[in-house]
Length: 137
Image 1 (cartoon, rainbow, N blue to C red):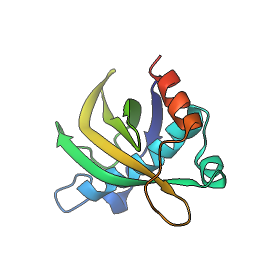
Image 2 (image 1 turned 180 degrees about the vertical axis):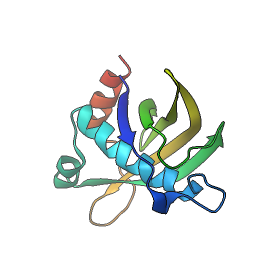
Image 3 (image 1 turned 90 degrees about the horizontal axis):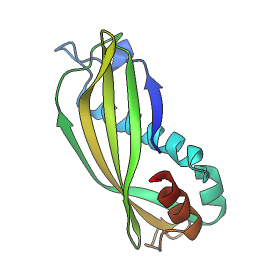
Image 4 (image 1 turned 30 degrees about the vertical axis):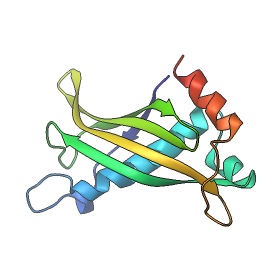
Protein backbone atom coordinates (compact mmCIF):
# COMPACT_ATOMS: atom_id res chain seq x y z
CA UNK A 1 0.00 0.00 0.00
CA UNK A 2 1.26 3.42 -0.84
CA UNK A 3 -0.34 6.72 0.04
CA UNK A 4 -0.30 9.71 -2.30
CA UNK A 5 -0.19 13.12 -0.62
CA UNK A 6 -0.89 16.07 -2.97
CA UNK A 7 1.24 19.22 -2.73
CA UNK A 8 1.03 22.52 -4.55
CA UNK A 9 4.42 24.29 -4.42
CA UNK A 10 3.88 27.75 -2.98
CA UNK A 11 5.70 30.81 -4.24
CA UNK A 12 7.49 31.14 -0.89
CA UNK A 13 9.01 27.66 -1.38
CA UNK A 14 10.76 28.63 -4.63
CA UNK A 15 14.38 29.76 -4.61
CA UNK A 16 16.22 32.19 -6.89
CA UNK A 17 16.80 29.40 -9.42
CA UNK A 18 13.03 29.08 -9.87
CA UNK A 19 12.77 25.63 -8.28
CA UNK A 20 11.64 24.30 -4.90
CA UNK A 21 14.34 24.93 -2.28
CA UNK A 22 15.63 21.55 -1.09
CA UNK A 23 14.64 21.96 2.58
CA UNK A 24 10.97 22.15 1.67
CA UNK A 25 11.01 18.59 0.35
CA UNK A 26 11.68 17.40 3.90
CA UNK A 27 8.75 19.42 5.26
CA UNK A 28 6.52 17.89 2.60
CA UNK A 29 7.81 14.41 3.48
CA UNK A 30 7.02 14.95 7.15
CA UNK A 31 3.44 15.90 6.30
CA UNK A 32 3.13 13.00 3.85
CA UNK A 33 4.48 10.48 6.38
CA UNK A 34 1.97 11.70 8.97
CA UNK A 35 -0.83 11.16 6.40
CA UNK A 36 0.63 7.72 5.56
CA UNK A 37 0.67 6.75 9.22
CA UNK A 38 -3.02 7.70 9.54
CA UNK A 39 -3.89 5.83 6.34
CA UNK A 40 -2.32 2.59 7.57
CA UNK A 41 -4.40 2.79 10.74
CA UNK A 42 -2.18 4.24 13.45
CA UNK A 43 -2.53 8.04 13.39
CA UNK A 44 0.26 10.06 14.99
CA UNK A 45 -1.94 11.46 17.82
CA UNK A 46 -2.86 7.90 18.85
CA UNK A 47 0.78 6.86 18.89
CA UNK A 48 1.62 9.85 21.11
CA UNK A 49 -1.29 8.94 23.41
CA UNK A 50 0.24 5.45 23.65
CA UNK A 51 3.48 7.06 24.89
CA UNK A 52 5.58 6.68 21.73
CA UNK A 53 6.97 9.30 19.36
CA UNK A 54 9.16 9.06 16.26
CA UNK A 55 12.20 11.08 15.26
CA UNK A 56 14.04 11.34 11.97
CA UNK A 57 17.61 10.03 12.28
CA UNK A 58 18.40 9.89 8.56
CA UNK A 59 17.12 11.54 5.41
CA UNK A 60 18.62 11.41 1.93
CA UNK A 61 17.34 13.03 -1.25
CA UNK A 62 18.10 11.97 -4.82
CA UNK A 63 17.17 14.52 -7.47
CA UNK A 64 15.98 13.51 -10.94
CA UNK A 65 14.30 16.72 -12.09
CA UNK A 66 13.20 20.05 -10.70
CA UNK A 67 9.85 20.97 -9.21
CA UNK A 68 8.71 24.51 -9.97
CA UNK A 69 6.05 26.88 -8.70
CA UNK A 70 2.59 25.76 -9.81
CA UNK A 71 3.62 22.20 -10.72
CA UNK A 72 1.17 19.47 -9.80
CA UNK A 73 2.98 17.33 -7.25
CA UNK A 74 2.14 14.17 -5.34
CA UNK A 75 4.26 12.52 -2.67
CA UNK A 76 3.93 8.74 -2.64
CA UNK A 77 4.98 7.15 0.66
CA UNK A 78 5.88 3.48 0.97
CA UNK A 79 7.22 1.55 3.94
CA UNK A 80 10.49 -0.19 3.14
CA UNK A 81 11.43 -1.90 6.39
CA UNK A 82 10.50 -2.16 10.05
CA UNK A 83 13.39 -2.87 12.39
CA UNK A 84 13.52 -3.31 16.14
CA UNK A 85 13.40 0.42 16.90
CA UNK A 86 13.39 1.98 13.44
CA UNK A 87 11.21 2.43 10.38
CA UNK A 88 12.59 2.98 6.87
CA UNK A 89 10.43 4.65 4.24
CA UNK A 90 10.70 5.80 0.66
CA UNK A 91 8.94 8.92 -0.56
CA UNK A 92 8.64 9.56 -4.28
CA UNK A 93 8.09 13.24 -5.03
CA UNK A 94 6.21 12.92 -8.30
CA UNK A 95 5.54 15.77 -10.73
CA UNK A 96 2.91 15.68 -13.43
CA UNK A 97 4.46 15.94 -16.87
CA UNK A 98 1.69 16.10 -19.47
CA UNK A 99 -0.49 13.03 -18.99
CA UNK A 100 2.12 11.12 -16.98
CA UNK A 101 3.81 11.38 -13.61
CA UNK A 102 7.59 11.39 -13.21
CA UNK A 103 9.67 10.92 -10.08
CA UNK A 104 11.36 14.27 -9.54
CA UNK A 105 12.95 13.53 -6.17
CA UNK A 106 13.28 10.31 -4.20
CA UNK A 107 13.61 10.66 -0.44
CA UNK A 108 14.67 7.91 1.94
CA UNK A 109 13.74 8.39 5.59
CA UNK A 110 14.62 6.52 8.75
CA UNK A 111 12.54 7.19 11.85
CA UNK A 112 13.45 5.87 15.30
CA UNK A 113 10.79 5.24 17.93
CA UNK A 114 11.31 6.99 21.25
CA UNK A 115 9.49 7.32 24.54
CA UNK A 116 7.22 10.38 24.14
CA UNK A 117 8.39 11.83 27.46
CA UNK A 118 12.05 10.89 27.90
CA UNK A 119 12.90 10.61 24.17
CA UNK A 120 14.91 7.45 24.81
CA UNK A 121 14.85 4.80 22.11
CA UNK A 122 12.07 2.18 22.41
CA UNK A 123 10.92 -0.73 20.24
CA UNK A 124 8.53 -0.05 17.37
CA UNK A 125 5.05 -0.43 18.88
CA UNK A 126 3.40 -3.68 17.76
CA UNK A 127 0.39 -1.74 16.47
CA UNK A 128 2.62 0.36 14.20
CA UNK A 129 4.70 -2.62 13.08
CA UNK A 130 1.55 -4.56 12.17
CA UNK A 131 0.03 -1.60 10.31
CA UNK A 132 3.23 -1.06 8.31
CA UNK A 133 3.59 -4.78 7.56
CA UNK A 134 0.01 -4.82 6.26
CA UNK A 135 0.78 -1.79 4.08
CA UNK A 136 3.44 -3.82 2.23
CA UNK A 137 0.66 -6.24 1.29
